[in-house]
Amino acid sequence: MADRLSFSKDNREAFFSKAEKDTYDLLIIGGGITGAGIALDAISRGLSVCLVEKNDFASGTSSKSTKLIHGGLRYLKQFEFNLVKEVGRERAVLHRLARHIVVPEKMVLPLIQGGSLGKIMTSLGLYIYDFLADVDDDDKRRMLAKEEVLAIEPLLPTSKLLGGSIYAEYRTDDARLTMEVLKTAHRYGANLLNYVECKEIAEINGIAASIICIDTLSGREIKIKSLNIVNATGPWVDEVRSLSETIQGKRLYLTKGVHIVVAKDKLPVRHATYFDVPHDDRMIFAIPRLNVTYIGTTDTYYEGDKDDVAVTQHDVQYLLSAVNQTFDIEQLTEGDIISSWAGIRPLIYEDGKSASEISRKDEIFEAENGLLSIAGGKLTGYRKMAERIVDMVVERLHPNQSNGFQCKTEDICLTDPSFTDAGEYRKYADELSKRCQELSLIGPYDAYLLQNYGPSALVVLEAAEKYLSTYPIAKALILAELDYCADHEMINLPLDFLERRTGRLFFMPETIKLVENLIFQYFESRFDFDKQTLENEKERWDNRISSILIFD
Image 1: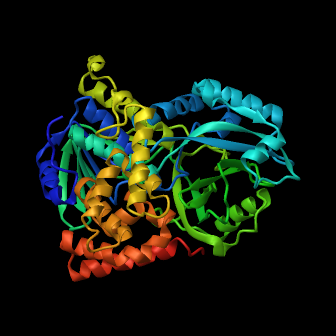
Image 2 (image 1 turned 90 degrees about the vertical axis):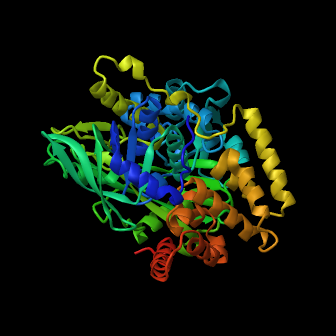
Image 3 (image 1 turned 135 degrees about the horizontal axis):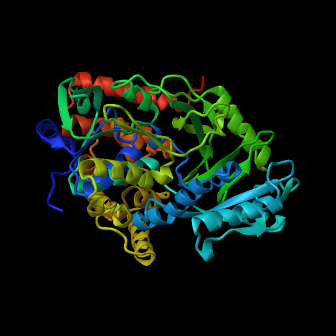
């Protein structure tokens, strides 16, 4: 790959100039995991690619999932064997491509008296799951007696526990995974623009040929030309479809998923646990991460503001009640919640089905003017979704020659450099842990840095040392992270950094007050924020921080 301008706001003008000048093979609207995956797939096949996102990258559904790369065990109940097979097998592929951010996680599945799961059906279901997902022998499910389950997860209720199982999934950070895919696409030459909103799809001879966009940071209008346009906007797919056609036939059905976060000492589960919601035909997760445990998710029909999805009292009480009835702990209350998030799933409407019953399969819609729209699907399946839609684009561009443009992403690592094997990854993790101790970084900062920055984690840590003469280590680290994200990850606004590049808003909220003034000083200096911009961003910051603890 040729040298590229760094993926930085410093080069945004150059990226805009290129977008206005070039005519692309493929223009993607939407900068979540689906759009990111399409961009990488297409650019790695040799297509010219531009992508626009109206907000920050991964600011919608792709930063508000359960943060698991999982095969969808519950979809076996709906007999979606092909979906389980595809995404189940993708787990190992994504782990190989990004070891630091797609990490194996043993999942405890307790069998509780009065629950929906029985021993025989659970064992059979997990056997089928392992078979479809082609799970390695070491990771195949194990059925456990009651005493074995309690030895693994002692917080489960002794009086109601019947037994359980343990099986393999993978944990991730959805926003960080999206960013790694985008950075890889950038290295291959894709032009990726955040805070650029599509307002109009223009046609030539009845074919979608360009979009009119607004740069939401400056207000300027730009036109981007392309031979093919793909709409990968998640919950906004129907709005973008309506720019070029009257929507007929299939449409979206939006559901809301809520997660709440508590300090780990309030719910100190040792392992991620997937458990029945009492008196409800649903299951939710309790997942330990750093110094917290997060709980979710809900699954309810949503028809509100897609740009401002709120966590409600009903959502909170549903999750608290499920946990309090399942674990032997001091009862959790709303006051124990330290953060939360709510996201929207862009599912395909199916008549007569509830939110939880609707399929998670992806579908592609083709408009008369050639606009391709993709919706549905799961985080885990983003790479295969991208492959399917790019195959269609390649067939348009190179009919009957598609064999020369095969998908390559199964072998494209998502970091540069990359971890070649598990041994190299563990060695790096040990070195990072040792260095954190030497710098007196208290808490699980080694895990935090490794997950967020992978093979660049030591680079970030070394950069922090240059600030130690002026700042304590916690603030020095923030400045080093800001430098890295400003240089390589296209942060434009403070919340890009706080919420999506670092995840501190959700998983380290106690650090925010300590560093918020420093963050604003950095943006003022690095990006020449004027007084009005600073005031506007401080207001957005305060409102966002308040929103994670206000439940209407």
